[in-house]
Amino acid sequence: MSQRPSLWSGARLALLALLSASLWGCPADEPSTPPEPDAAIPDMEVVDQGPPPDMMWTEPDERCPEARSKVQVLALYADRLEALTQDERGFKVGRLCTFIDLRELGVTTARGVAQGADEGFVFVYDAGEEGGALLFYTNNGEVVRRTPVNVNLKDPKGLWAVEGAFVVLSGATGQLYKFSADGSFVGPYMPPQQSSARWPTVTVLQDLGADSMGNPIVLATFSDRSPKMFAFPNALDFPEEDVGSAWAVTLVSTQIGDKIAISGEVGGARGGVQLYRPVVSGREIPLKETPPPPNRPGPIIYAGDNPDFYGNGADITPMDDGFFILDTGDAGPRVTSYNTFGIPQEESSLVELGLEGTPLRLIRTRIFKDF
Image (cartoon, rainbow, N blue to C red):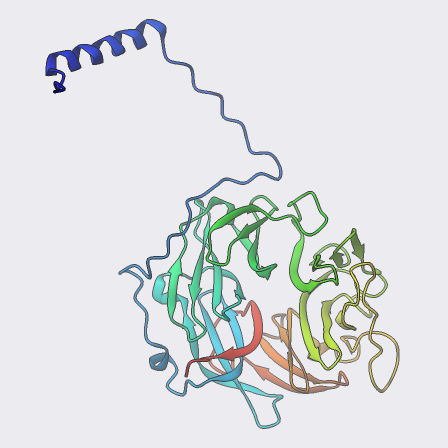
């Protein structure tokens, strides 16, 4: 029968250990070293336990009494996601409702939004000196979770769904960071066939799928140079004479595949929209599309033709018969429409619709899929 050691013997052992530590001394702390250029500061993993009690939000049908499953135009603001209607012709937009109100959770510094495989919405927002965080909602506009504040998300410049995950550009480090589909921090994100995560001037990352061998293809646009297509076996630059710095990309679904529309410095410094045919291989840049009549080579939309209509072309999203262009320039926030021939159609002032602030992005997608 084993005997339990006495309290005195236990105390004696503790005293001996303390004396030994004092005689030999404790090792000095290692000097802290800054992370490598492509390193990242790890953060705790996300544990999905549902929204905490302090995440109070209104039900979707309270915010949007006319909620029903439908493709809508969405405008991202720093504190909310507004749903816009389209008229009978589809070219003019009106106000429907505040689809997601981030202010209910105290968020007024959203910097980007993306949709995951479940068609839910993920926002990245700035949380101050400590970093930033991700906020998840369902496709119906219901709160799912908020991740812990992560220093790698400090001063976020954008959020994109890429290769089944989410990628954020940190303005503090100029690096891209990867987060899993549930918001868990993974580490630095290096585009396909690249050895660095440092891409400080990225404006958009667009997932283009994979080639015939399963290698991912990602298109990147930049604020200081022409776009680049990251693919196997190497990255390819778009010709600067076709498109220079750019700030928006969207995919246009067609019978032959997804065409690529890029809004930026095309057709002259004033800008416009250049359209490309679907990617055939990661070994070559997609062919530039020749627009319909007047059938001249160049951008499908050229700001020089209608400079006041195109504005600064801050974002672009396709519709059934053309494009919506977001203008956040001096004329005030507005959404303008062009048909498939690149001919301007309607202009909708967001201020006149009663929407305060300057939108960051436009999205056209189905919402309320369960309604």
